[in-house]
Length: 308
Image (cartoon, rainbow, N blue to C red; front, top):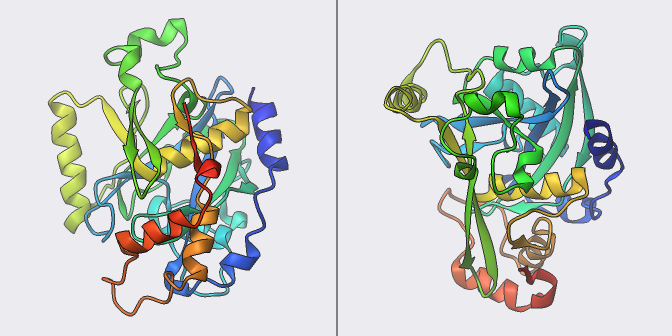
């Protein structure tokens, strides 16, 4: 399954992005790293973080390593790798990754629109090497409160996928893994996915030295785990990107209801062409609900129809 999934990702070709990427101002460009690795049984897992309070947006949320562009010359993969270096200690320079580990850039997925009106480019990479699972937990959680991983294929399932011999390590019931609901957002239906990733069967990396907002979230997680927290919630844009990435990798559709389209390319293109993704003058310059509604009305609803 791992070999076939990686092959599909390598061969995946998203819509051409140069036209819209080159038109976006610096303040609207962002990228995230979907870092995959194989566990000891050969199953793919994906690296995730819990964001610290020192980060202005989405503090305390589960997210991919990633962030905004520093210059107009950075490619999406350069942004994603730089942010992963800063957030989880993954070397940005491939020559500094200890042997026998290697990172292969597999593909880029269509843009997603963040709530903060950023065009986010998901960049998929594979960390290979014997016992690659051991390298990820050694990453230093710097700008984040925790680094953990989740079973990649499980983002197509309604219940935990676990081998019979490992069921005793699973907290709660298998059905605790997923719940979801439809929401109406700007004249169309969107599926909100909520995944609950078990943490009792893996090593969660937390910062050794905790300062400021990073300490706040990390210590809160410690307390909640002491009082019975056994799963981290993954939701929002991160969950939607994971579902789309798994659909592409495994050539399967989810067991749960979901939106049929991948990413938000058409919406971002429409917002840019109508002047709603201009350079931010202040941090308060966001796309309004009215602007998003106007953009949606100009896009054929059937292309973004919900798959039920």
